[in-house]
Length: 68
Image 1 (tube, one colour):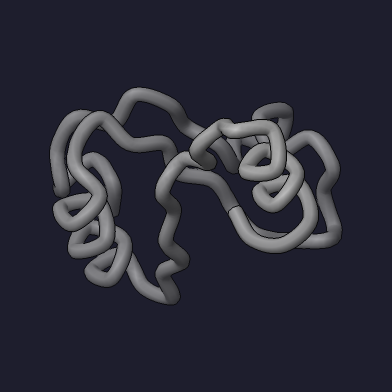
Image 2 (cartoon, rainbow, N blue to C red):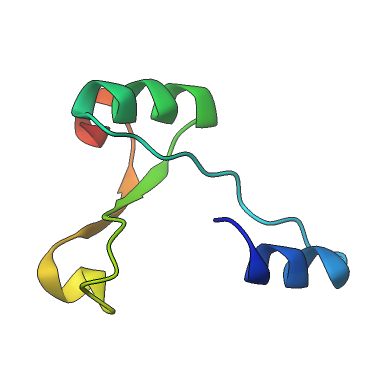
């Protein structure tokens, strides 16, 4: 989460959730380990507004293998 709305949250005293971007499944697993579990995974694309409808967003992943 970067840019506009994380700044808006911070301006109101709210802490934005930690986030990371990964280019490969291995990078995603490593990032998930660093963030701590559970994590959510979603695609980063301008082509789809509602990523869950495309199966491109998953919540509650509890292990590095699931984050791949």
